[in-house]
Amino acid sequence: MEWNLRPSTPADVEWIAELKADVLGDDLRRLGRYDDVRVRQRLRDEFAAARTRVIVVGGADAGSIAVRPTDDSRWIEHFYLARDHQGLGIGGAVLRAVLAEPDPEPGPGPDPRPFRIDVLQGSAARRLYERHGFVLEREDAIDAFLVRPAAARPVISRVGDDDAGFRALVAAQEAEVRERYATEVTGPGIAPGTPALVAYVDGDPVGCVAVGRLDATTGEVKRLFVAAEARGLGLSRALMARVEALAAEVGYSALRLETGSKQPEAVRLYETSGWRRIPNYGYFRDDPEVISMEKPLAG
Image 1 (cartoon, rainbow, N blue to C red):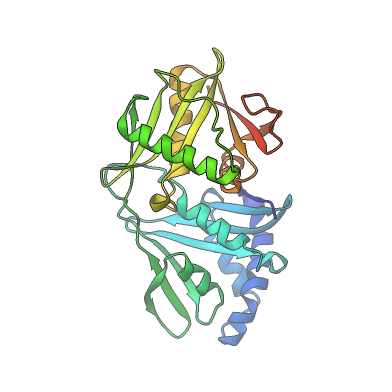
Image 2: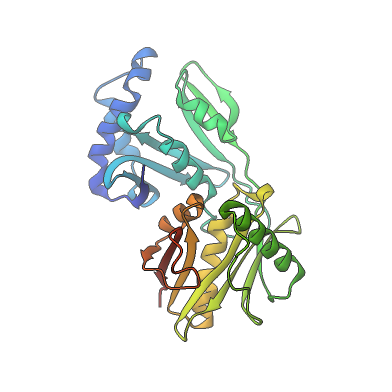
């Protein structure tokens, strides 16, 4: 089922308070902690639109999630999903997207702040968090406090198209495309002089992307790839953010790309990053499995 995240506004507080009361009601009653007024008022008191996103499913508001940064942690809060959308994999997909988001204030070295979350004892949601790397840190009779250690922060550097690490990653990307689509055709190669980026973790090249030229004002994202062992760290989203900045620096006002129906994770990444589908335009324009997308760049 299609979903996306939208920024929250102060007008969202009341329906999210109602959603919280419905989603947590059974567990709070089981623990003897349900108070019809307090469960809603606590949400109102803690709600901050600036750090909250609304989960939109099929075009309708269906949930919420917030991340509250502190000096030593990033707390996931107010993560609620309407009952009729639970059990469909949406909650896990939202959680993975949030965990993979790049640090809004990037800096050198690993981000020292782990993710933390407070879960009611006996809640089925705890299994979801444990599947995504959260472990028990402490607990009491009512709450279990879980923590997910921070991953090492990658370093993303601009390289030439002849860089050995970049070329090796491009070869791995093309091999994966051939396997997924059962074809030997991977499209035009990287033209000499194409600006490129490589992501490194602990000094090893693990991800890449390049920005080719379509015309004087339009660039093309090419060869976005993250090695299997480095997936789940948010590198694809971080590389896309950096390549968009690189394209603007080069002088492009818009970007295009070609992806495919057998790469649903890539399509989801683009759609949740402001890209929109357009008619096919490029080398694979007549391929029914191709999906073409475009994004204007901020001036």
